[in-house]
Image (cartoon, rainbow, N blue to C red; front, top):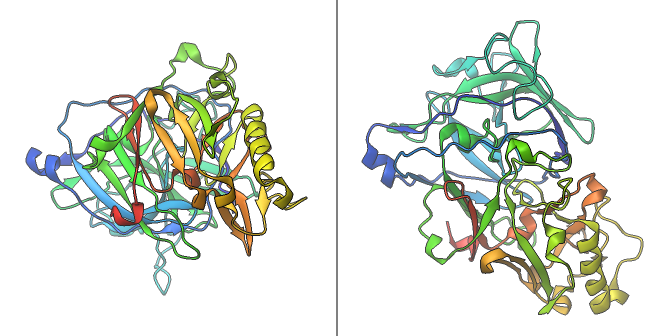
Length: 429
């Protein structure tokens, strides 16, 4: 089920920070948590809401958390939430702002226990009433208001592309990493009506996102290559990554209120992409195709919550032309995966295509090996994991998680940059 949603939400105005009993513990801590992967991922948000781009960058000392995860189509990390902590599975999503968890709708708990959060078991759980300052219409970062439910609590709704509705109340709760280290209560969604079994860890640049509220200035992940039906384990860091000396960085493009454009998502991790190589050949795509124009169309964002990569029409056509030139007779005619991917084959012929390299400013690259060029979508059908942006109603270039395999991807918010480093992610746990 695609998790392409429209937000009926708003932004928190109160950034918070990780707390620890000692600064030393905070600086040196590296905790590992189990992380699974969901068998689906959402296309990126394509709403044209206007956003602020306010990032919290505190002067507190660095801290490090390391969390393993398994890869299928979207990274899912298991995090301890509440007091005492309850482990919750959350999709790691750099394209979303609000984090939300699955909450029990009614008590007592079902038998066998479901992997949902039980508010009655946490001493630090609280709900937000309608008169709370952040539960007001037209709060910056979202143009659509929240609502007030029959209990006078702050209510939110997600509408998914397939018609599924996920909704609940806005609440405050802690992430408890250890006895010594936890966040203060953060604003989260507590979903009660949803068909999904996992929550969302919103990691974009919005003020309601997990990094902004917790004042996390750096995080990174390493998504392993999927092999057959196996979902290997990768890694997720909050704080400094010991592998970062080998990363190449590209600057983030940030956008102030005066730069608001109808097709731009200013809360996304927008990077300067300059070109594409396939099999060693640099395609004739102007670098301007990968940068936002006056309307905001063309921005290039890194999105862990999107399975596929999407290019605007001019870039997509050039990629497809080269694929057709190399292996055109083997294309599966008339087949389109997910209504977006139309370069499909009856076997993995990636070695006949060669490596694909996404080129960024300052020499940063994502190298997609020929063995990973195609994605097994069903049965024996393999597709280039790429589609045209306009097929999902977007006007952006989106680097999806399939094309982030076997790379460290670091989001250095404090220094306004994104780093890439080639890695065997199955061994980087």
